[in-house]
Length: 96
Image (cartoon, rainbow, N blue to C red; front, side, top):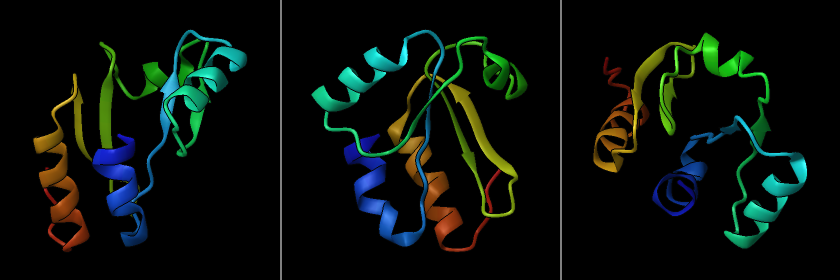
């Protein structure tokens, strides 16, 4: 996410947020430091956020537009599909 989306798109208005389901704050910090991650990672140990977004697998990727509408939601990581949705949203073409 860092190099595929966050760095190239952040100046265009993209926000990236990760949600960790199991690790402690200390382990998440070590992971962020080791991998030079600069976007926020939220902790969700009771999976209250994850369950509300209907996540059924990890990783689970969601793209939300500026109006708060979920435009893409899928388990796994498909950079090409995510890039297509993000590019469309940034160009003003909402994709479902």
